[in-house]
Length: 82
Image 1 (spheres, rainbow, N blue to C red):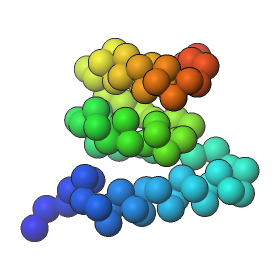
Image 2 (image 1 turned 90 degrees about the vertical axis):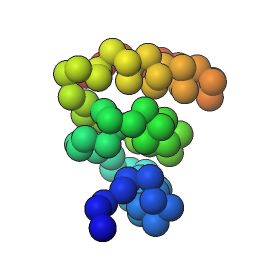
Image 3 (image 1 turned 135 degrees about the vertical axis):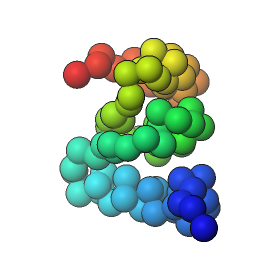
Image 4 (image 1 turned 45 degrees about the vertical axis):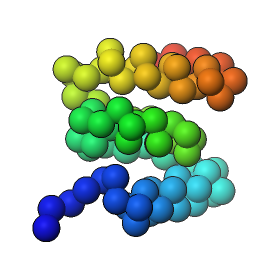
């Protein structure tokens, strides 16, 4: 059986990690293939309040646009890339 980032258990683990980091005043980011491959994973992470996401070069523009739209829908000010 292969790993699936969209699995409810995996999403819960990501939520717990982001919430724990935020609760303790820590920066939280993710490095991996999932946000590059699946914009819905990137959307989920942004909705959780993640601070940074690394992306593969071929998906940067598409994912930045999606993140911008998500943050606008949440009423958040757009962030500048680091």
